[in-house]
Length: 595
Image (cartoon, rainbow, N blue to C red; front, side, top):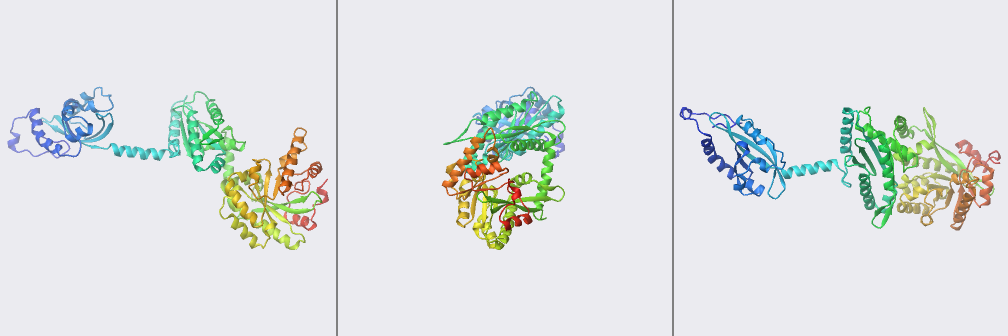
C-alpha cells in the first residue's frame, strides 16, 4: 500500500513477492488501522470510495450532520452537499481517484438534517492498490463555519455603515469601479453617480438631538433605497452625505428622473417619534464616461455638482460640467492661500460708519474684513467668507478681526470726547468655540476697552443653528456688558419666541428690505414689515439699524417709520482707517455723502 503525499514505504523482498491484493483486501487491511484512528478523533472524518460513496463516517461527523452513522454510510458525499448542482460530479471524482489526482485539500458546504449548512475544510489522503490505482480517499475535516461567519461579519462591518447598514465609501468605490469596468467593455452600457446631501440636517440634529438625527439618517437611507432599482447601490459616505451608483441606465435622462423622484419623496415629512422633520436634498449628478480613470474622480465631480446645487439655493440638482472642476481647483488654491493670509498680514479691516437718523452723527463703526491677495488683488468677502465658514478658518480669522477692531476703537476712544462703539460680526462657528467668552474678555482686557464699546453681531439664522448653547453664550457676554445685535433680521426664522430668549440690544434690518421698500410691486408690504420690526424693537427696548441705505428717499421713509440708526453708501462706504479717523474726528459723515 502507498499513501499519496507521504514518502513511499520501504517494501521487503517478502512483501514484494506476495501476490497482488484485491481492492477489497486493501480496504479491509487499511480500514482496521484508519478506523481505529478516525474513531478517536474530535474532528469529522470519512472514507470515500468510487463515485464519492461514503464507506465510513466517524461519530463526530454523524453528530455534526445530525444523521445516524449507518444512514451516512449509505449515501454519497454529493447527497450531503448543499449546492445540488452535481451533474457528472461522481464520474469525475471516480476518474480522478483512479488517476490519484484528488485535491489533497478541498472545501464543501454540507447540509445537516436540521436544514442548516456547515462549511468543512477537508485534508485528504489517497489509498492505492498494488497497481497504483486509487481505491479510496481518507478525509479528515475541520468545521470552519463559525470562523467564516465571523470573518464575513467583520468584512460586512468593514464595508457597511454601522448606522444605516448601507455600503460605506470603500464598498461604494468598489461598486463604482465595477461599473466603470463594464463601461469600458460594453459600448452601450451607461452608469451615473448621484451625490446627495441632506439640507438642514444640522439644524434638525442640533434642535432635536443626535438620537433623532440618527433616526433621520436611517429614514433618509430608506427613502433613497426606495427611489432606485435593486441593482443600484446606495451608500452613506459619512454625516448626511449619501452617494448612489445608477447601474445600466435605460437612457441618458434617467439620472434626472431619479433626482426628481428623490426630491418628491423628501417632500413628505419624516416622522421622528413625536416630531415631523422636513428635509430636502441637494443632488449632484456625474454622468459616467470612458474618460474617467478612477472612481474617486467620478465621485469628486458629482460632489462638485452637488456643491453647485447648494450654492444655487439647495433642494435642487445640478449635472456636472468641466467648468465646475476648474472652479473647484481654483477654490482649493484660494483656500490654501487663505490659510496663509493671516500669517502674511494680507487681511485688513475697513470701517463703515453707523449714523443717527436724528442728526446724522456717527455713533459707531462696523468693522469689515478685507483680503488683499498678493496676485489676485482684492478678493471679495462674498468669495472668501463662505469658504472660511466651511473650512473653520473663520474662527482664527474672527479672533483676529476682534482683536484688531478692539485695538482700533480703543485707540480712537482715547482721543475722542464721546466714546464710539465698534460692531464685529460673529459667525455661528465661533459660537461653538468653548473659549469664546474668555477670548472676548481677554481681548477687552488687553486693550483696556470698556465692554459697552463692543457690539457683537450674529445673523438670525446663525442663532438658530444651536439655540440652547447660543443663548447661554450670549447671556454670558451680555452680563459682561458687551452689546449684542441680530444681523439681517427678518430674513431667517423671525420667531418672536426665539427672539425673546436672546439678550438682544439691536435689530439690523436687512438691506434687501430697504431696497424693496421703494419698489412699485412690494413697497407697501415691505414698509409695513419694517414698521412692524421698528415697533417690535421699541416695545422690547432695542435699537434698530437699517442696512444698505443708498438713497435720500430711503432715508426719509425709514426716519418716518421711526428707525433710529442707519448705515449705507448714502452716508459712507466702508472706509480705510485713515478716512475713518477723519469721520470719527468730525463725528459726522461728509455732506457730500448725503442728498
